[in-house]
Image 1 (spheres, helix red, strand yellow):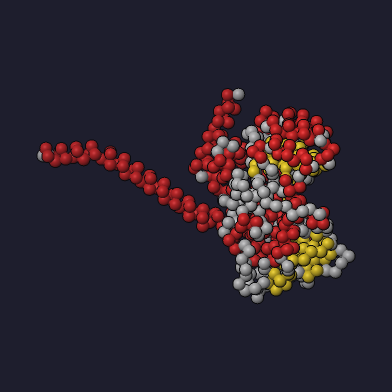
Image 2: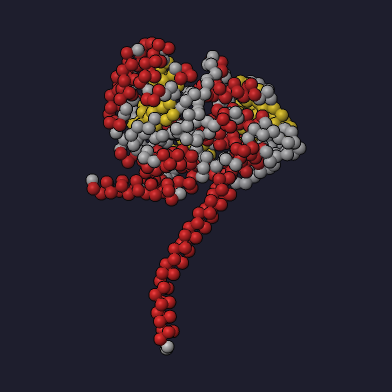
Length: 529
């Protein structure tokens, strides 16, 4: 081989590794960019519409182009879920009737609450940051919307006051909605086997005809246990109900603060917050089962303190301020409790009689999920759905009930917009509703259940053990701990927990890496100990 060609070959070989390095690096970079773009396409076109309500939210409140559907919608129950469903139905049906067994909370004489600052206090690694702030878009349409726990826009009001506000807004802005008091006994079906319900039967009153029926009766889950079977739809198989008992109980103390105490209380609250809450929720791996939760609302000078937990007996629950003080000091990670909490106890103890305190013990009972989406096709009424606790009863400690009701309402709105005003509801309407809403709310049930199973006193669902969902429990624990150190992780937690973003967003590299690092530190500490 001539020297010139040999030198050319040697020169080419010496350059080759460098070229391959460049090519490999460029290829890897291109692959990562392509995967990122593909992930965004899948997220925005598949996951966002399926797992969140953000796409459906665009149509909420928009006027129908073909007029309202002929007939009347009957909503069984006037709680928050029922009121939101009624607001939606009023946009689609000629009239809406809400039938409730108790008098309206508006009769209690509560003043209309006003929007105010609402922020979450996060103190210590056991404090779970949660909030239910609202955007203007949803305030206008009576729907809850969780965005960011540090946003200043929100309603710092009690649940009772919020329900009253919703009721008054429905009454004033929905002239085609009416209310009546009565006890519903069941559904009416013109022909046995017909998939259309014709109305509801009311105790000691005339039957009420309906084009569409919404069951918002809450944790009684009356459709599943009685009404459907009695009207010819059933019996529904027991396998449709997923039920477990967290054996949760807590004492609730409520104080109404007199005007003269408000300035003193505001001095104690951090950053001048006039509404908000502080909590210390137990983490199952610590062995602690007790909790404390404090909420204060400016709308009624109202302060509520809940204390109890999983498997906590009545004797273990505090019912006086002195007991509450010692209870708080005895909790796991009590050293993270801010000092203003104890100063507030001192103030309440000093002016106890002036605050008209009252105490009550609560036992939420069993949690239940009726899996209508798994019912055999064609076995459910087509002009009927369930919303709120009538479908999924969640552990109230986690505070997701209003969010769930909002998701149900927005999902219902999206499907009613597909129904022509000149047509009957399609035979598969209820099937479509449950198949669409469950992927959006199922994560709340699974998350609640996974955490509750971490406490040894919980009675698991039939055929399950408390070892179920151990990985999810550990992942969630480190997710929360990582969120206490990273606002980005905390925001991702809030968005995913409230259905604003797909739950898959928590697996984004920037989020997952922080969770993995926190998990690695936990495992390292466990080995050292």
